[in-house]
Length: 132
Image 1 (cartoon, rainbow, N blue to C red):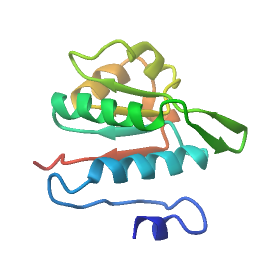
Image 2: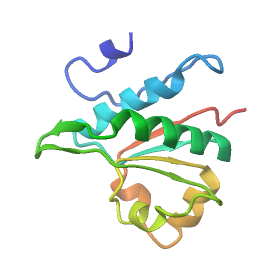
Image 3: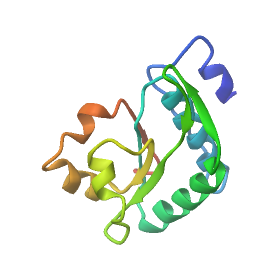
């Protein structure tokens, strides 16, 4: 079903709705990689809990480790990052737009956006469970 969303190029919006533990993390990864391949990255994934950030980062990092993605500029590696109050190692590279796929809590996005126009170079934002 998700693959049909991407027929003919990048969609204007993608909404993934599913119950907890229904595999949304994998679907978010697929949507994010598609956006990166179409030059719509970096991709920000807003998640409400710090534990989700760490889990997403671990899942995505292992899924893309050693793999490349074909872009308009040629094949290249994929960089992922997680950012919360406790995950700060990648913050500088995130603010420079040097990470392709970023899992971040909304509060941290607000903090990082105070001095850097993060949302100006981020064309694809995914919100995961923010209504919970």
